[in-house]
Image (cartoon, rainbow over all chains, first blue to last red; front, side, top):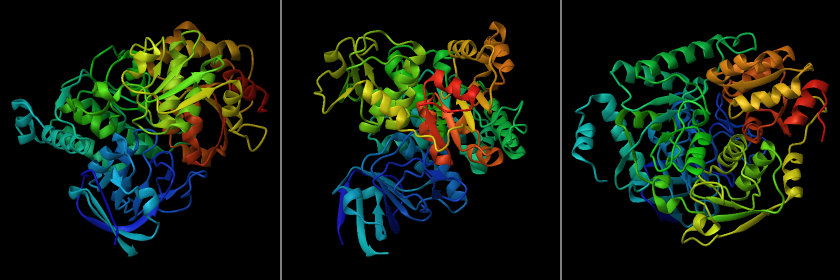
Amino acid sequence: MTQLIGAVGFGDVVEAPALVSTDAFSARYDLDHDTGVISRESHDLCGQSIAGRILVVPTAKGGTATGWRLLDLQSRGLAPAGLVLRTTNPVLVQGAVFAGIPIMHELEPDPVTSIETGQLLRLVPREGRVETLGQG
Amino acid sequence: MYLTADEEAMAAGSDGPAVKWAMDYQLAVGGFFGARRLVRVRSAHAHCDGEALGEPGVRFLEQLADQGARARIPLTLDPRSTDFSCALDIGQSQSIVDTERRILAAMARMGALTTNTCINYQTVDVPHGGEHLAWGDTGTVIYANAVAGARSNFEGGPAALAAALTGRVPAYGFHLDECRRGTVLVELADQPRNSTDWGAVGCLVGRRFPGYWEVPAIDGAERSPSPDEVKQLGAALASYGSHAMFHLVGVTPEARTRADAFGDNEPRERMVIDRAALDGAYRGFAPERESPDIVVFGTPQLSVFELAELAALFEGREVSCPVYATTSAAVLRSAEEYGYAETLRAAGVRLLSGVCYYLMTARELGRSNGFRTLVTNSAKLANIIEGYGYNPVFRSTEMCVDAAVTGRIAG
């Protein structure tokens, strides 16, 4: 097990498999809202569903729609289980808090390079800690 | 976080459940970013289109309104997903129309001005230096911060609404002096010629230095760009880079000089933009076919001056494919009064008000009309619309008009 340590985040403890991208994320710019599948052709996760995964991305992208959209995704079972960013913008945090989805950022080592897609993660936002639990 | 006695009372429920929700929400978001206090804001601007909200978001607004929630500062609204006058004609669903009517009704009950504009800063709510705001729509925020010297973070829909209910926001990010100084230097080796060139600058800088906390300082402009040119620059920076602030040395108020723009910061990186780079920004959007399926002007909504420019370019010509131009209700009324609307409608341009194309259930519009190759003079729209299954083509305003008229995309 390896640990990532950093800033106190938002939300309850959650365990789920990681989905890692080197591209930034926006629920408006990148996602087919009807299916929860990344639909932007130039995104490195194009074709993959974010539902029930812990999305690990460098940063948040673009506009304000994510502030509302995570709640709607969650009501249809399509939301990510958690969000881990190298550095986030306010909108993704506002959306995650609105939907009650755990979110963390500013961790060491860098989550984008130290976590692999498919690894099972445990987020402990109030303690600023992410644990890798092996392959999910 | 330090709270005043009034704020403690709001958090304890003294002003009712809606204000308590708003305060709890703001404390959670502010806590995440290490805010030490709240700061009063003069106005709030909420993005709340029906496509983004979905049914849970609409129910949330209706529940707040039922609880007696009331904005205690001016609250304006960002564009809707539909122009009620033509929604079904252009292939949108009745359900999005119904959703938008419910949103507007709930927002009006809470005291919002149903402005449905993303150019509030050019029309109904012009910001000024030093004031604190709670604005959503990234293009409005970057304009307020950079051009007016006002202070706002990106406040997504629920966050802007919470601010309207408490009259405050958590004081972090661009409310604080230390976040507003330049971080990276951009030098213009050649001059942007028009508003799409300024959009191209925003595209290049945003791609190179993505991240909310980056503040590009752009130096070398030989003339002060027009408000619409700065609007395109800001909207593109916010879209491609998620930036909330920039400096234009010698133009924007917190950057009279390069030293002023950076304060105690040293530029971490430097980028030079020349003509070849600007041309490359356009060429990076390659059309799959020579003919456009649709041409869109707007994003942000067009100003009266931009509609005047379009009217001059379309005068006496006729479109050969669907052409949409999006603006606000107030600007459209002005364009009707000045005769620009008549000229554009005579050429076959569809004028849509209260909307922006990417908010307009664009995936469904694309499917129902066969729209894929979309030509636009908006660098921001070209960026967003790819995620909706389009082939975006960003070109100068003149080339977009030519493509609309001839049915062929040049360049």
